[in-house]
Length: 299
Ligand SMILES: [Zn+2]
Image (tube, rainbow, N blue to C red; front, side, top):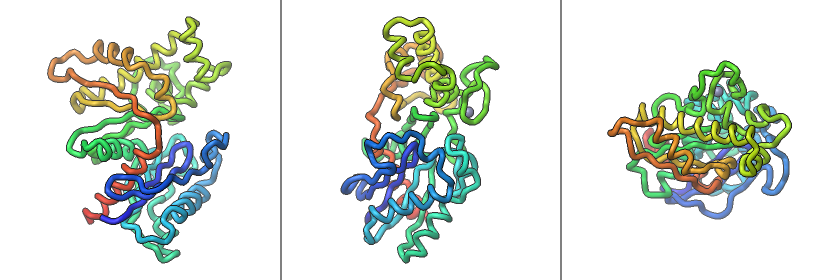
């Protein structure tokens, strides 16, 4: 296999060149690192997002031959079509696969484009970079929304971030509008809606210094992730759960372990573990590229 390109779209666009499950050279970022423009993609028209992605890919490929392009994109997308993307709502209905493929065939550098969920790209990247392509890898991505990824990719939907984790009808902060969802408790945007007077950092700081309202919420936050994980264990078996994303820094794995132990009691389902991994775009970029290579060679 030659070189492929991996793209990750989350709160920003990150693009890298990948060969033999490794990143070659540096990553291109939009917006550039250090620029303080949160949620810039949220306010950008869908067509402009496509152009931006195309522009960054061109920069990275530098006219070299590219075997495949993989794009990890938030939301439900199948066969290149964005069917729903709660945190980039304007992209609903966008055929990202076709739009990007036409950008490159116009430029005379056609390469098959493979679109997958951003968290699925992360899970594939963890499997590829840790030599676990033969194992079941599950990953939570804690950002503006909550992503859930699985490798090998399930042939259907992977919207574990929208797992129902509470029956309280007042829990309505999820980006998708659904009641009682994991993202409605854990997502960055949801936390800001809940605590109109505090930023998420301040909530976790408050819990550490003993503020009761903050402490209660931090327990709920962990309990919600344990609950969604328990559901995954009950449906898909025990195993390793990787946690990444900007808000993974707030995770206390000991607390998660103890809640999960309360929630999963059947002995064949015991033995799951959480691991917080550093948030870098590299893993998901590699995962997107490797998934695109697999998809291209399957055709
Ligand atoms: Zn939801």
